[in-house]
Length: 342
Image 1 (spheres, one colour):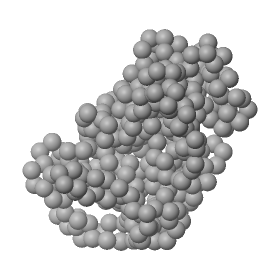
Image 2: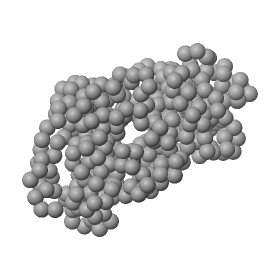
Image 3: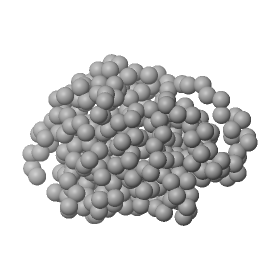
Image 4: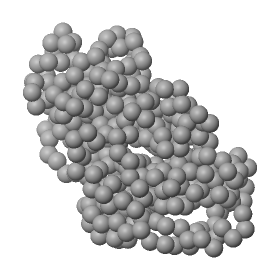
């Protein structure tokens, strides 16, 4: 593909709090074990909001002795490229890459996904199934949900509660609805989202603004509490609700959320009395990241994850600021947004 590097990549970068600019940069050549893709679409994710809003800086990794530690800077850094849910077409492969070729449709995590071109690690991406459109290929969240559902692992007849009926919570609902649980309980402050949860298979919905959660859970479970509570709100208040609902003695609480805002909640008594098992089911919890990513794509192609229904907002690349303002304001009717580069 001679001459392709004469083109410039267009990349969206946060240049100030709540302000993105699309800049032009040279397209880098893929190094060993890397591929260059032309990005077709990239999902909007709430974990990018602390950087977009200027509350936090980028994630970094450093070695502490023999261990690699990841952390997020407290101070923002500008300019900074964001976006980690890209899908696209391979334009070039670096040395040592044999599993992908030019023209392959691929998806997986990559920094700076809101761009026309991105470099991706060949060991962390996967081929997109032929029957799955690229704009529905939100590989990183699909990998996460696959890992969450595996960690939940409900037994027959379990009571399961999912706190938060946003995009990720609804995907979890859709997958767990296919398990033989006694009740799948969805909680959210927004009735419209609880309606979505019912569509995804939730059998009971609770709005904590309108009902006493502990009383309602006691009524549903005969005073026992839920076997599994999954907080996917991104707020410590959601985690507090999970501790209040879970049964006494080795009930499971899953926390796949990114808690990006400082909040004060008092969970000490509940944790002491109930002694739950707490799983941090972020990507690092997965035993095999790539396997879960491939499984998530397969499940989407087979209709397990109804991505197409849940993408409620689509934006052109030039409208990236509008896209992030929509993500930040979370308007009525918003579940998931994507940005398309074509």
